[in-house]
Length: 509
Image (cartoon, rainbow, N blue to C red; front, top):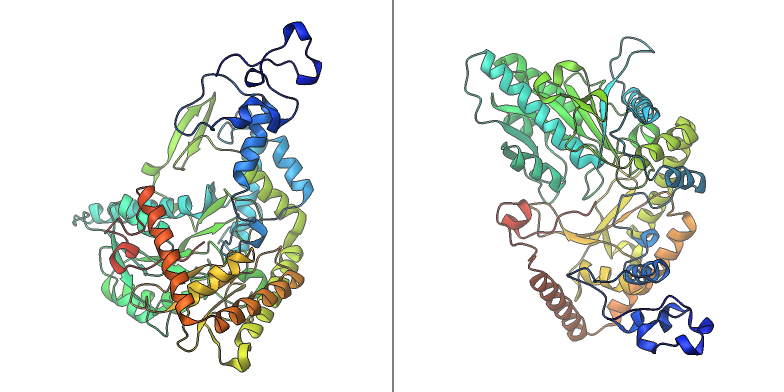
C-alpha cells in the first residue's frame, strides 16, 4: 500500500485530492485499511492510525466468549470500578523495581502476611513477618514449592550420605496439569493415586503407602478442579506422621489451595487443612480465583525458613537496590498485586465471608435444581454441597441417552453459556461430567436464567432424533480435529502427560 493521507476526507482541498485507496477516512470502515487483509505473520511496512488499530483489535476480540457467561473458569471476571482505576493508574509500573517503587514491595509484604495469618501460619507475634511471595498464578507458586521441597530433600540426603538422584512426588492423578509440568520440568518422579468411579479425592492410606525415602512431599488438593471436593489433609497428616516416625523419614505435605484457600476459611472455618496441620509445610493459593482479583496473581507461603533452602534464593542488585528474589521471572506488572491488596482492604474478613456464603447458597440452589431434573431421573450430582467443597456444581447423566454431556455443553454454548464438559481423571475417564463454577458475578438471578436455558437445552436434545444428535456430534468432532491439525496442536500429540496416556480431557480451571 502506498502513501495514506492523514487529511480527513471531508476536509480535503480539491487540489490536494488523492484517490480513495490512498487516504484514511474519518470513518474506520470507510478507510482504505478496512478493505485490506490484516497482518497475520509479518508486520506491515507502514503505521496505522491509533483509532483504526484499536477498532480492528476490538473487532477481532468479539470472537471471544463473554467472560461473565464463562462458567468453566474459576478466574475472577468482576472487580469494582475503584479497583480497576487503581490498576489502570499503575499499568506502567514494573513490580520487580522495588528501589523505584518501594510501596509495591510493602504492599506485597502486607498481602503475604494477611494471607499467611488467614492460613494460621505459626508466627511468634502479631508483628512477625510471614514467609511468602506473590506469583503469576498458582502454577508458578507450585513450581517454586516443588523446587524448594526437592532441594530440601536433596540437602538432607547429601548430609546423610545417601543417594539423591531419584526424588518423587505423591499426588492425586486429578491434580491440575501444572503439577505434571512442575514434576517434569524439575525432574521429579510422579507417583499418582488414581481416582475410581466412586471416589475422586485422594485416599489418605493408599497415598501414604506410595511414600518412601525418596518422596520430597505429598500434595493435597483443597478443591479439585473436577468436582470441587476437598481432600482430607488432617487424615493424610496423621497417617504420614505415623509413617515418618516408624521409618525415620521426614516427609511433609503441600496443600494446593488454588481454589479453596479463599473459600474454606470463610465458609467452613472448622475444617482443619492449613498450617494448623503439623506436616503442612507450604500452601499455594490463587488470588485471581476466589481471592477476587483479576487474572495474573497467586501466592506461595511457607511454614518457616527451614523449608526454603538458601541456595534457591538470589540476592540481586536490580535497578540499584539489593533484593532477595525467589521467583521464576523478574519483570511483571504491578497491577495484579495492587488489585489483590485492594480486595483484602476493601472486603476484610466479613466481606469475603458474605461473598463466599452467597456463592455457596447459589451453588446449593443450582445443585438442587440439577438434581431435581425430570423428578430426579436425569442427572447425578458429583460435587458436594453445604460448604464441604468449592461453590461449584458438577454433574453427569444418570442414564444412557442418545446424547451425552458434551452435547448438552454444545447446546448451552448456542445460548451464550460456556459450560465445560470433560472426562473424569485417569482410571475413571469413562465418566463424563459437566461443571458450573459459581463466581462472584454469578448471581441468583443469573443462575435462574441459566437453569431456564439448561432446561431448554435438555428438552431440545430429548426431542432431537438420534440420527441428528449423532450427526451434530460427528460434525463437532470433525471441526475440533480440523482446528487442531491446522494449528499443529493435536490435543493428544504428547504421550507423556496424563491426558496423552489416558486419552482424557483435563479439568478446566
